[in-house]
Image (cartoon, rainbow, N blue to C red; front, top):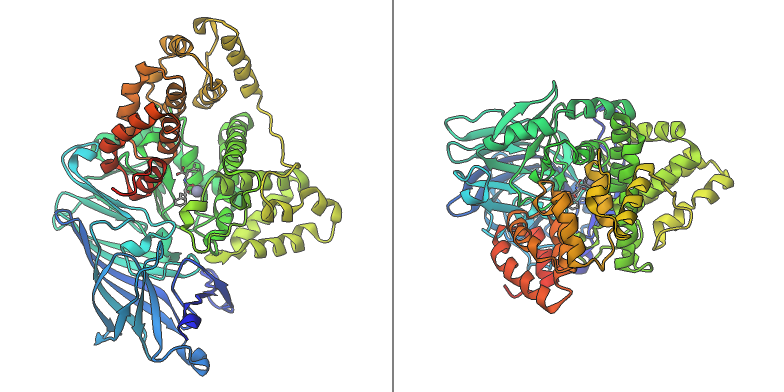
Amino acid sequence: MKNKILITLTIITMISQTTPAQETKTRIIHDPHSFADPAIASVKHLDLTLNVDFDKKILTGKASWDIDNRLLETIKEVRNTPPFISFDTRGLTITKVTLNVTELVAEWSLDEPVPFLGSRLKVNITPTTTRINIYYTTSAEADAVQWLSPEQTAGKVYPFLFTQSQAILARTWIPCQDSPGIRFTYNADVTVPKHLLALMSAQNPTVKNDQGKYHFIMSKPIPSYLMALAVGDIVFKPIGKRTGVYAEPVTVEKAAYEFFDMENMLLTAEKLYGPYVWDRYDVIVLPPSFPFGGMENPMLTFATPTILAGDRSLTSLVAHELAHSWSGNLVTNATWNDFWMNEGFTVYFERRIMEALYGKDFADMQAVQGREDLVQTIEELGKDSPDTKLKLALENRDPDDGMNDIAYEKGYSLLRLIENTIGREKFDAFLKQYFAEHSFQVITTEEFLVEFNAKIIQGDTSISNKINLNKWIYEPGLPDNSPVIISERFNKVDEKVKLFLSGTSPDSIDVKGFTTDEWIRFLSKLPAGMSESQMKKLDDVFHFTKSGNSEILGIWFERAITAKYTPAYGALEDFLIQVGRRKFLKPLYSEMAKTPDGMQMAKKIYSKARQNYHSVSRNTIDEILKMNEQ
Ligand code: BES
Ligand code: ZN
């Protein structure tokens, strides 16, 4: 019987915000990354009370979950006696569990932990149980949470905390049903030290209060991977009517300058694919250890400060996270195996926003760069690797292992191919309807295929053969029919790289008007075998080592490591100690790890830098440097 229970079935209840009268359909989806068994009971609302203790580095909480109790429907095939509801937890200490608003003492138990997934919390219920109250504390090592000392912040005076829940880390700070198919609304009361502001993926305060107590409301149902909390010396600056930025006081002006176009991005996005349903769209700029570029926490995108280039050149990241307000947060991948349904659609949407605002030549530079990254990722993984399929097989694995450029850029290529094949107008109409019809629901890759066949292909084999969706989705590598995108601006850059490589001095190469994307192209086209003197010539004229642009630094340092260009090493070390964004760390540490000397340098730097990184980045770099024993 135990085995039977272990088969996790996720029932997806389709909730419609706009038409509550709509019939709720129930589907069963297998989510290999959650212990939740919604055939018995699933959560629908959370009342969370949380106390943030910076000294002990723990969160103490009470999570009260209202549930949809399906015991009466399923009791005939009594699957376990006595029946219980299952939650995901990892590293949590559960101190007490009670039932209903009356808080009757509950019978509960915590299973042995399973790698990546953590421990299933079982709470016995009866057909009349409506609410489960879980009292708990997090461990100081909770993987979602990063506790920063004042020195690790921009202001250097107050501590800071942020969480990162995607993909399956929400369970390390909230006992929850941690599956993208289970949605819930939430209210939260969070207590933090005075002088600090708390923010969540919800309606947020804009100013601090004397009590350090903040109340949050998320009135739209969201999945657990979008639960988020940030606490620090944070201030707010509005940008437009519905948009604004949060950041530490020393960063907020720079952030507001950088993101001045956010309101336009929002309006542009709405024009493309329909109304923005989350009320406000704000961005918080976090300390540099944030492991991602951005995270689409509803109402409040979390972002790395490494996009503050000072010239607004890295803001496609904001377009990306904003686009997730439709693709991902409204229409959600059913399981992490369908991750491309979140990210591929979002990259496509992001580039449409950028094209509408800044022109096709601009968006196409990013599409071409994306393609180069894709080709490189496929090379690294191997063109036959199952991880290069759009539909992933992440069972029994940490989902994080399979989340790479494939979902983003192979996904984008497929959607661009569809656009080229059926025409933009038709595809836009399809997408607009897709977002409207699947709002607040999950989508599987297979459901997308069925819908696309019914609405677009309609038996026309000339279209289906031209696209060949099945090959794109279920086969590895990059299909031959992937669209070739040409960027005239990049072609001009390539000519300049050739000039340099054939001996022309950098100061007689005309780089006037180069944007960040063109510099990235320039640097990425430098061959691996650059000599130290070639590197020096470039650096003397273009001052890459001193660049304030993280994207330019990232590639430059990679080249510097390969060429053993030592004048850049000091800046490289500073960068690696400061910045915890995995996208930059991974290639730099990997490049160093290729030679014995480099490996030594990498380990030396990492011994200082590791404490500054979030667990997501630490795990990746531990693996590269094989320092797991730490
Ligand atoms: N949702 C992702 C970040 C993520 C993915 C977190 C998988 C955990 C697991 C976010 O929207 C994203 O894609 N961020 C990118 C930015 C981007 C512009 C492609 C990043 O962080 O680099
Ligand atoms: Zn994304």
